[in-house]
Length: 247
Image (tube, rainbow, N blue to C red; front, side, top):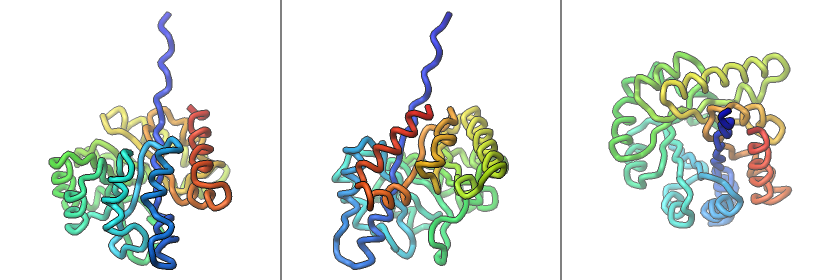
Protein backbone atom coordinates (compact mmCIF):
# COMPACT_ATOMS: atom_id res chain seq x y z
CA UNK A 1 0.00 0.00 0.00
CA UNK A 2 1.38 3.39 -1.02
CA UNK A 3 2.26 5.87 1.72
CA UNK A 4 -0.13 8.82 1.97
CA UNK A 5 0.91 11.99 0.16
CA UNK A 6 2.29 14.50 2.68
CA UNK A 7 0.36 17.75 2.94
CA UNK A 8 1.56 20.58 0.75
CA UNK A 9 3.69 23.14 2.65
CA UNK A 10 1.84 26.40 3.20
CA UNK A 11 3.94 29.56 2.87
CA UNK A 12 3.40 32.66 4.99
CA UNK A 13 3.91 36.01 3.30
CA UNK A 14 3.95 38.91 5.77
CA UNK A 15 2.70 42.31 4.68
CA UNK A 16 4.70 45.03 6.44
CA UNK A 17 2.75 48.06 5.19
CA UNK A 18 1.51 48.94 8.67
CA UNK A 19 5.10 49.36 9.91
CA UNK A 20 5.54 52.05 7.27
CA UNK A 21 2.19 53.62 8.19
CA UNK A 22 3.38 54.05 11.79
CA UNK A 23 6.68 55.53 10.57
CA UNK A 24 4.91 57.99 8.30
CA UNK A 25 2.59 59.17 11.09
CA UNK A 26 5.52 61.04 12.66
CA UNK A 27 7.88 61.33 9.71
CA UNK A 28 11.51 60.27 9.94
CA UNK A 29 12.80 56.73 9.61
CA UNK A 30 11.40 54.84 12.61
CA UNK A 31 10.07 52.16 12.68
CA UNK A 32 11.98 50.89 9.67
CA UNK A 33 10.07 48.52 7.30
CA UNK A 34 13.37 46.98 6.19
CA UNK A 35 14.14 46.03 9.79
CA UNK A 36 10.69 44.47 10.01
CA UNK A 37 11.50 42.45 6.89
CA UNK A 38 14.61 41.10 8.59
CA UNK A 39 12.55 40.03 11.61
CA UNK A 40 10.07 38.28 9.30
CA UNK A 41 12.95 36.26 7.86
CA UNK A 42 14.32 35.41 11.31
CA UNK A 43 10.87 34.35 12.54
CA UNK A 44 10.29 31.88 9.71
CA UNK A 45 8.25 33.94 7.29
CA UNK A 46 8.48 32.86 3.67
CA UNK A 47 8.08 36.20 1.92
CA UNK A 48 7.57 39.93 2.26
CA UNK A 49 4.53 41.68 0.81
CA UNK A 50 4.28 45.45 0.37
CA UNK A 51 1.73 47.64 -1.38
CA UNK A 52 3.21 50.71 -3.04
CA UNK A 53 0.13 52.89 -3.31
CA UNK A 54 -0.32 55.82 -5.64
CA UNK A 55 -0.52 58.22 -2.66
CA UNK A 56 2.47 56.56 -0.89
CA UNK A 57 0.52 56.44 2.37
CA UNK A 58 2.75 53.70 3.79
CA UNK A 59 5.48 52.02 1.72
CA UNK A 60 7.65 54.51 -0.18
CA UNK A 61 9.69 54.01 -3.33
CA UNK A 62 12.95 54.02 -1.39
CA UNK A 63 11.76 51.20 0.85
CA UNK A 64 11.69 48.69 -2.00
CA UNK A 65 15.42 48.53 -2.68
CA UNK A 66 16.29 48.55 1.03
CA UNK A 67 13.94 45.65 1.75
CA UNK A 68 15.43 43.69 -1.15
CA UNK A 69 18.96 44.43 0.04
CA UNK A 70 18.38 43.56 3.70
CA UNK A 71 16.63 40.21 3.32
CA UNK A 72 16.84 37.33 0.90
CA UNK A 73 13.12 36.61 1.17
CA UNK A 74 11.03 36.91 -2.01
CA UNK A 75 9.40 40.33 -2.34
CA UNK A 76 5.77 40.41 -3.44
CA UNK A 77 4.89 43.89 -4.72
CA UNK A 78 1.19 44.71 -4.61
CA UNK A 79 0.47 47.28 -7.30
CA UNK A 80 -2.28 49.00 -9.21
CA UNK A 81 -2.54 48.37 -12.94
CA UNK A 82 -0.95 51.66 -14.00
CA UNK A 83 1.97 52.63 -16.19
CA UNK A 84 3.73 54.22 -13.20
CA UNK A 85 3.57 51.05 -11.12
CA UNK A 86 4.56 48.87 -14.07
CA UNK A 87 7.70 50.99 -14.55
CA UNK A 88 8.56 50.70 -10.85
CA UNK A 89 8.04 46.93 -10.87
CA UNK A 90 10.23 46.52 -13.93
CA UNK A 91 12.94 48.66 -12.33
CA UNK A 92 13.01 46.80 -9.01
CA UNK A 93 12.22 43.37 -10.42
CA UNK A 94 10.52 41.83 -7.36
CA UNK A 95 9.97 38.10 -7.17
CA UNK A 96 6.24 38.66 -7.62
CA UNK A 97 3.82 41.42 -8.53
CA UNK A 98 0.24 41.12 -7.34
CA UNK A 99 -2.14 43.39 -9.22
CA UNK A 100 -4.76 44.79 -6.87
CA UNK A 101 -7.61 47.30 -7.13
CA UNK A 102 -6.88 50.68 -5.65
CA UNK A 103 -9.13 53.58 -4.66
CA UNK A 104 -7.58 56.71 -3.23
CA UNK A 105 -10.33 57.13 -0.61
CA UNK A 106 -10.31 53.57 0.78
CA UNK A 107 -8.60 52.71 4.07
CA UNK A 108 -7.36 49.40 2.74
CA UNK A 109 -8.01 47.22 -0.31
CA UNK A 110 -11.73 46.63 0.02
CA UNK A 111 -12.38 43.90 -2.51
CA UNK A 112 -11.01 41.84 -5.33
CA UNK A 113 -9.83 43.08 -8.70
CA UNK A 114 -12.39 43.00 -11.52
CA UNK A 115 -10.11 41.01 -13.78
CA UNK A 116 -13.01 40.15 -16.07
CA UNK A 117 -14.02 43.77 -16.64
CA UNK A 118 -10.44 45.04 -16.95
CA UNK A 119 -9.03 42.41 -19.29
CA UNK A 120 -7.83 44.87 -21.95
CA UNK A 121 -6.12 47.07 -19.36
CA UNK A 122 -4.51 44.15 -17.55
CA UNK A 123 -3.30 42.11 -20.54
CA UNK A 124 -0.34 44.33 -21.56
CA UNK A 125 0.78 44.79 -17.94
CA UNK A 126 0.60 41.06 -17.25
CA UNK A 127 2.52 40.45 -20.45
CA UNK A 128 5.30 42.94 -19.68
CA UNK A 129 5.79 41.63 -16.15
CA UNK A 130 5.83 38.04 -17.30
CA UNK A 131 8.37 38.80 -20.03
CA UNK A 132 10.60 40.37 -17.36
CA UNK A 133 10.48 37.20 -15.26
CA UNK A 134 8.24 38.63 -12.55
CA UNK A 135 5.66 36.16 -11.19
CA UNK A 136 2.29 37.83 -11.76
CA UNK A 137 -0.72 37.29 -9.54
CA UNK A 138 -4.20 38.81 -9.45
CA UNK A 139 -5.99 39.63 -6.20
CA UNK A 140 -9.52 38.48 -6.98
CA UNK A 141 -12.74 37.38 -5.35
CA UNK A 142 -13.28 33.62 -5.25
CA UNK A 143 -15.71 33.73 -8.17
CA UNK A 144 -15.83 31.71 -11.35
CA UNK A 145 -16.03 34.80 -13.56
CA UNK A 146 -12.84 36.23 -12.08
CA UNK A 147 -10.99 32.92 -12.17
CA UNK A 148 -11.95 32.49 -15.83
CA UNK A 149 -10.51 35.94 -16.52
CA UNK A 150 -7.28 35.02 -14.73
CA UNK A 151 -6.99 31.91 -16.87
CA UNK A 152 -7.57 33.95 -20.04
CA UNK A 153 -4.84 36.38 -18.97
CA UNK A 154 -2.45 33.49 -18.38
CA UNK A 155 -1.32 34.46 -14.89
CA UNK A 156 0.51 31.78 -12.88
CA UNK A 157 -0.99 32.82 -9.52
CA UNK A 158 -4.24 34.14 -8.09
CA UNK A 159 -4.76 35.40 -4.55
CA UNK A 160 -8.31 34.98 -3.28
CA UNK A 161 -9.71 37.83 -1.20
CA UNK A 162 -10.76 36.41 2.18
CA UNK A 163 -12.24 39.60 3.60
CA UNK A 164 -15.86 38.47 3.32
CA UNK A 165 -14.97 35.18 5.00
CA UNK A 166 -13.13 36.99 7.80
CA UNK A 167 -16.01 39.35 8.54
CA UNK A 168 -18.83 36.79 8.25
CA UNK A 169 -20.17 34.53 11.00
CA UNK A 170 -22.09 31.28 11.25
CA UNK A 171 -23.62 29.94 8.02
CA UNK A 172 -22.42 32.93 6.02
CA UNK A 173 -18.81 32.20 6.97
CA UNK A 174 -19.25 28.51 6.15
CA UNK A 175 -20.58 29.48 2.72
CA UNK A 176 -17.62 31.78 2.08
CA UNK A 177 -15.20 29.04 3.14
CA UNK A 178 -16.88 26.58 0.79
CA UNK A 179 -16.63 29.06 -2.09
CA UNK A 180 -12.92 29.71 -1.49
CA UNK A 181 -12.29 25.97 -1.17
CA UNK A 182 -14.03 25.26 -4.47
CA UNK A 183 -12.24 28.01 -6.36
CA UNK A 184 -8.83 27.03 -4.94
CA UNK A 185 -9.32 23.48 -6.15
CA UNK A 186 -10.44 24.69 -9.58
CA UNK A 187 -7.49 27.07 -9.88
CA UNK A 188 -5.03 24.32 -9.04
CA UNK A 189 -6.74 21.96 -11.48
CA UNK A 190 -6.18 24.52 -14.23
CA UNK A 191 -2.51 25.05 -13.44
CA UNK A 192 -2.84 28.26 -11.42
CA UNK A 193 -1.28 28.42 -7.96
CA UNK A 194 -3.89 29.68 -5.48
CA UNK A 195 -3.02 31.99 -2.58
CA UNK A 196 -5.33 33.76 -0.11
CA UNK A 197 -5.34 36.74 2.19
CA UNK A 198 -7.11 39.69 3.83
CA UNK A 199 -8.54 39.88 7.32
CA UNK A 200 -6.97 36.64 8.55
CA UNK A 201 -6.33 36.35 12.30
CA UNK A 202 -5.27 33.77 14.88
CA UNK A 203 -8.96 32.97 15.39
CA UNK A 204 -10.03 32.45 11.77
CA UNK A 205 -6.91 31.35 9.87
CA UNK A 206 -7.03 27.59 10.37
CA UNK A 207 -10.06 26.73 8.19
CA UNK A 208 -8.44 28.67 5.34
CA UNK A 209 -5.01 27.16 6.00
CA UNK A 210 -6.56 23.69 5.86
CA UNK A 211 -7.56 24.12 2.19
CA UNK A 212 -5.06 21.71 0.63
CA UNK A 213 -4.54 23.48 -2.69
CA UNK A 214 -3.56 26.83 -1.17
CA UNK A 215 0.17 27.46 -1.43
CA UNK A 216 0.49 30.78 0.42
CA UNK A 217 -1.33 33.08 2.82
CA UNK A 218 -0.53 36.78 2.92
CA UNK A 219 -1.20 38.36 6.30
CA UNK A 220 -0.10 41.77 7.52
CA UNK A 221 -2.24 44.23 9.48
CA UNK A 222 -3.21 41.68 12.13
CA UNK A 223 0.34 40.45 12.68
CA UNK A 224 1.79 43.94 13.03
CA UNK A 225 -1.10 44.91 15.30
CA UNK A 226 -0.46 41.91 17.55
CA UNK A 227 3.23 42.77 17.53
CA UNK A 228 2.42 45.86 19.60
CA UNK A 229 1.59 43.50 22.47
CA UNK A 230 3.85 40.48 21.90
CA UNK A 231 6.56 41.53 19.45
CA UNK A 232 6.68 40.85 15.71
CA UNK A 233 8.68 37.62 15.98
CA UNK A 234 6.23 36.09 18.48
CA UNK A 235 3.27 37.19 16.38
CA UNK A 236 4.65 35.57 13.24
CA UNK A 237 5.70 32.40 15.06
CA UNK A 238 2.21 31.92 16.49
CA UNK A 239 0.59 32.39 13.07
CA UNK A 240 3.11 29.99 11.52
CA UNK A 241 2.26 27.38 14.20
CA UNK A 242 -1.49 27.70 13.60
CA UNK A 243 -1.02 27.33 9.85
CA UNK A 244 1.18 24.29 10.26
CA UNK A 245 -1.30 22.67 12.66
CA UNK A 246 -4.09 23.15 10.11
CA UNK A 247 -2.09 21.20 7.54
